[in-house]
Length: 144
Image 1 (cartoon, one colour):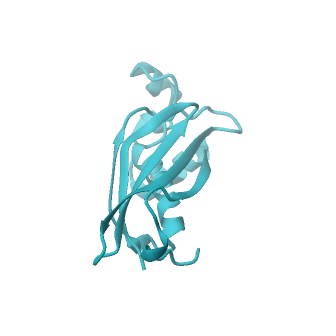
Image 2 (cartoon, helix red, strand yellow):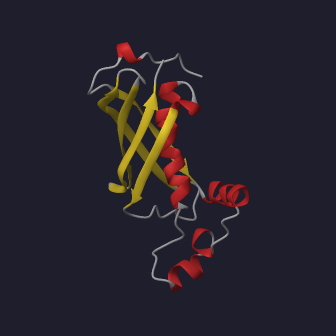
């Protein structure tokens, strides 16, 4: 776990450490088991093709969780995130090969919201293969 981030030390524009996350078919199977989401668009190329997708795609909630890790790793405590929301803008196709896909996430402090509550708004950017995969990705974080 990283050191605790102090509200007094954070300014608007502070960039969080960017992270890159591999997304493999094996990871999708593991996520399906943990979440109970066994929709075949996440594991069957045949089914994905039948519904007009180029490939199996990552679960949206899985992609959302990857992006949140940038915030929780920075804050040092997952419970520091008091609000989090995204819009799903593009799916993350996951090829059936040894590499899979990659989700790249960057974030920065966009606003200091409440001095008494020590909350900031963090805006995130998540991309895969050059495509923005999450829109309006924002977290409200309570800092030390």
